[in-house]
Structure formats: structure tokens, C-alpha cells
Length: 352
Ligand SMILES: NC(=O)c1ccc[n+]([C@@H]2O[C@H](COP(=O)([O-])OP(=O)(O)OC[C@H]3O[C@@H](n4cnc5c(N)ncnc54)[C@H](O)[C@@H]3O)[C@@H](O)[C@H]2O)c1
Ligand SMILES: CC(C)[C@H](C(=O)O)[C@@H](O)C(=O)O
Ligand SMILES: [Mg+2]
View 1: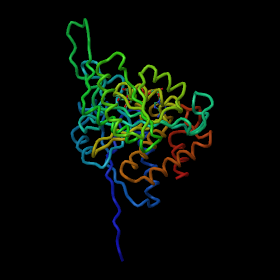
View 2: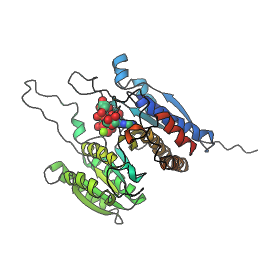
View 3: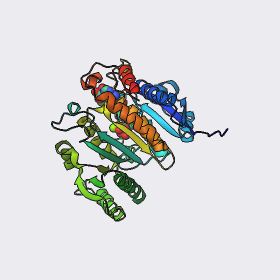
């Protein structure tokens, strides 16, 4: 008898705050159902407390034990972190997701946007799949790198510096072009090179990297126009690459085109470490009520499997989501439906 060993992936699960625990349990339930069908690999989980709730307990929103578990795992599945009332003394919220991105060097933030059903979009006339693009957000520098900046005590002014490096711009552009090569071979740089010298620099590097990808069509779009075109003609986009803060803002706008925050998955990807989480936050307005839309987190789990190399399993989850959503009644309240987080998850599992 020949025993073939199958890979086992250790997944650090960070439920976090607000609806985070509800949506991560939904994604883990889908992964469990997938595992039960014998996909040729196994998953083991370790759960860690992080976020605003953990800060209130221990004084640290990202305890060393949780951080080390993330570093040592094959991948991390995160819910959401932060609560508007829990802040550092300088007034900023606890945002340990940024610490994770920076400390683990998770420089690429792919945020795929896909329309599952015409009625889910506030835009008229788009059929399923006709809105299909990915925002590649630079995750470790840009305006966010100013977050620890010390402000003058006189309270007469305040400033944050937008910092970009050649290394950071090159690697995010290369990631975006590689993504475009796997997709429809178009890459749009979203910048503000009409005003900011940092963005002239970003554009120069984008154009340099583009030379290595002659098959990919390119364009430069100012970020304000990009917001307009995303609403007016989202079908014209394939891959958009942009600075950290611009990517944060545009990815919420883009989620709105396909049904809202609950429909938008994301990855935070480094060279040998990655975190997967929905693009949304902790939604304190609906937390603990079973109303959270689990789709973004379930699709993030699919991105995780894809990144681990389990592409077939990732596609099975994406297809199960597609089939479940093909029934218009299968919607949570944010999308006008009556399903709970748990009942929609069951519908997805039934289609696996
Ligand atoms: N990645 C993260 O962990 C992350 C992302 C964004 C915001 N936050 C934090 O979350 C808190 C709330 O922020 P916010 O209100 O600006 O953004 P949010 O994304 O939590 O909520 C915005 C709106 O979308 C709705 N929504 C979000 N996710 C949903 C889901 N899965 N199902 C149904 N409806 C959903 C909310 O009910 C709310 O109306 C803040 O503390 C913020 O810092 C965390
Ligand atoms: C909570 C916040 C720090 C975070 C970000 O801005 O990166 C979130 O909005 C996101 O989009 O992941
Ligand atoms: Mg955001």
C-alpha cells in the first residue's frame, strides 16, 4: 500500500471585533464543509484574540503571541478589528491590521470586485460578471506610513507625510502587472501626478515596470477621475494599482458597485506570509445580531486557498457563492434580503 501524504495548512484565525467573529465563523464553517469532502489537503486552525476588545482586556490590540502565530502560520484569516470608541491617547483608533501589514511586509493588497447578480448593483444594465476588476492597493507605505506622526502641541497645525520608496512602487507595480497577465491584460495606474511629486515618482516607476510587460495595455488616471469612471464605466477596468490611502477609499466605492461592503474580499500579501479578510470593518451598527453578510469573508477564504496553491478548492467556494446568490432571495438585510449570517452560509455550503 502506498500512503500519499496530503498537505496540512496551519491557519491563524483572528476573529477580532464587532461582526468579525460572526463572519469568520461563517468562513470557517465553509472551509470545514470543504474539508469534509476530502479536497486533498487539510486545515488546522489556531484562534487568537486581537483588536479593540483585546486592547480593553490586556492593553495590547496585537499581543506578541497572536503576532507570532500569524508569522508562523501558513496563512491568516481575519474578521475585522477596531471600534470607534477605542482609541490611542493621540485620538487614533486601534488599527492592528496596519501593524500586521507593515511588520509582516504584506505589501500587496488585492481587492477583487465582481458582480454576481444584476440586481445587486446600484448601477443599471450590468449583467453578472460585467463588473469584474481588482484594485491592487499598496499596503505598507504611502500616506498611512505617517500614522505615528507627532503633531505640534500648540494645536495650530497638523501634517502627515506621504512617503513612497522605489522598492515599494516597483514591487506593487510588478504585482499588479503579474495580476493583469493572469486576467484581461490591462493595468491602470491611479495617481495624483498632476499635483503631488510623490505621484510623479510613482508614475515614472509604473512606466518603467510596464516595459517588462509589453502585452499589458496601460493607462494613467487621476484618482478623482478614477472615482468617476468606476461609477460610469466599471467594465473598462481590469487591474487598478494605487497608493495605500487611495486604494482604501476606492475599494469601498467599488464594493458599493456590487452590493456593498459585505461582498468585497481582500488579501494582504507578502513574499511568504499573507492575511485574508473582508474589506469591510467591524460594523458596530449590526454586530451581534446575525445580520452580517458573510460573503466577503467566505470569498477571502477562497483567496486564501488560491494563494496556498489550492486553486480547485478556491474555485469550488467561488462557484458555491455564485450558485447560492443566483437565487435573489438568498441575501442578508444589507442587500435587501431576510437571510441571517448563518442561513446564507448554509445555502453556500449546500452548493459546495
Ligand atoms: N479591516 C478592518 O478590520 C476594518 C476595515 C474598515 C473599518 N474598520 C473599523 O471598523 C469600525 C467601523 O467602521 P465603519 O463603520 O467606517 O466601516 P464598516 O465597514 O464597518 O461599516 C460601513 C457600513 O457597511 C456595513 N457593513 C460592513 N460590513 C458589512 C457586512 N459584512 N454585512 C452587512 N453590512 C456590512 C455596516 O453596517 C455599515 O453600515 C471602525 O472602528 C473602523 O476603524 C476595520
Ligand atoms: C481599519 C483600517 C485601518 C483599514 C485600512 O484603512 O487599511 C480598513 O479600512 C481596510 O480597508 O482594511
Ligand atoms: Mg478600508
